[in-house]
Structure formats: C-alpha cells, structure tokens
Length: 95
Image (cartoon, rainbow, N blue to C red; front, top):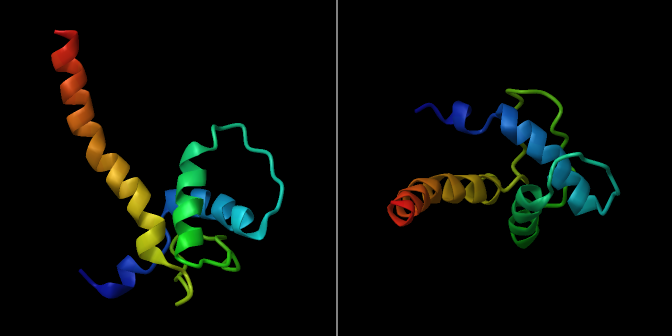
C-alpha cells in the first residue's frame, strides 16, 4: 500500500483525535459518549509523548511527523482484534 494513505487521517481518527488532543492539553470539554475509549487512546498517546498540538480538522489531512500514529492506532486495533474471541467464548458460556 502506498505510504501516503497510511499517514492520512480517517473518520474515527478525526473524531477521537480531537478529544485526545484536548486531553493532552488538559482542556475541559463535554462529550455525551462514555470516555473510556478516548482515555485509553489518550493514555497511550501520553506515553508516546504526543503533545496534542496537531489539529484534527479534516478527513484525509496528512499527519505531522510529531503525531505518534502507531500509538494512536494501537488501542482500536487491539480492542477490535479481541472482540471476536471474547464473543466466541461468551457464546460458549451461554450455550
């Protein structure tokens, strides 16, 4: 795959990235959705030393070199990968 497609923002990254940037700047905001997913991504972004200065303002915009893409994409990838085995084991338990 072409490298330019990997370094452009996607819809969910735009949504979550705004909130993660606000967490990194310690700015108060109100969101009607539960914060756990954004907090997990924010925690990993903090560990990757993301400063929150990148503006997630447009789908398809290129990321700056300072944005830790691996850290921002790791939590959703791991959680999405774990959903299938958890659902399988839940179905086994339920009969």
